[in-house]
Length: 455
Image 1 (cartoon, helix red, strand yellow):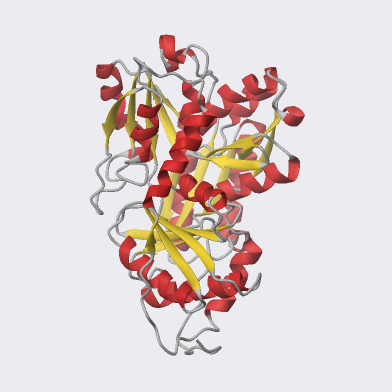
Image 2: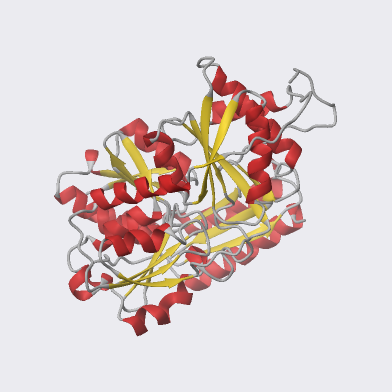
């Protein structure tokens, strides 16, 4: 490997959750992925000359095999070895990276995106997602590597290591006896398709598995965390105490209670935060949430004497603020929930589900007996496909439209415009006390964004 590269190569840009895009197209093409593997290897070798091991898992997409090969080629060029964990959730990979002594972990996943997409998330040896500074350094390194000769190392199969993760969860919830209880699990035909039913059965549950048969092409296809209503009937008919919907890589979960009501990350915060406070396990009587959190939740928690620390969207941002402030609980509305445990942060859809099942009344009367109710402000989110992503604040027409909406809403609502970190989308969200106002203002903002930036 040498230290130069063709002028035609464009370094990748890590988004809010790693690299993501259509599989086969930059940055998810073999050349870029080889360079990312090599860049990571160079970055890791700075800690010493010994041979490094990197744990790699995937969420079941058809493109995962050749992406693994490309990463292994790059890592191998720097004397780093890839170990293949196989089909797994992102949280399981993060845990096993730390617990099994790997110097880094790579999850091949595009989370909730369709099967044609893929991506990679990189974790350090402590199971934490790489920070922005480390990702910028990797981007720069990819532009400086060139391969004189490539081989394709065969990653070692370590899929049996998943048992260690199941044992870990079993020990964490050793007091949770699900014997005689039915739980519906929708794994989105993704990374949780095997381990999700396995952990629930380990704890004694009768599991109704839905979308637990990944074929490489059916991930997130009308199932999972993006489509929780699809399991309502199964929950009712089976008499389940809870329905669990994971996303493609299993790091978030949306719930359906025994009455068919859907509960998101805001519902989980509303339910768990007061309980943790009552138990003296909520440092500072504060939780962490993102700008997408419903205003109704903030009012609900304020009434319980609980404050909310706000961050930009992204579980990485929630985790950063939790570490900075020493907080024990944080969440995104989309279903990412983070818990502090023994100095580590756990963001795991299955872990969250087991916490919900542990709540008083769930096993006896169903999850509807435990989830807190709060008055949500009507909220609507629309995605506008864009050609480029110039700074929104640099567009006079968009800033004027935002100012006009904010002036109308005052303290009784808000507008949020932001780009997706993984797709060519601008997300437009409006929240207000009544649905008619929300719909009118969203439509107005969408029209402006589409006219100014639309693809």
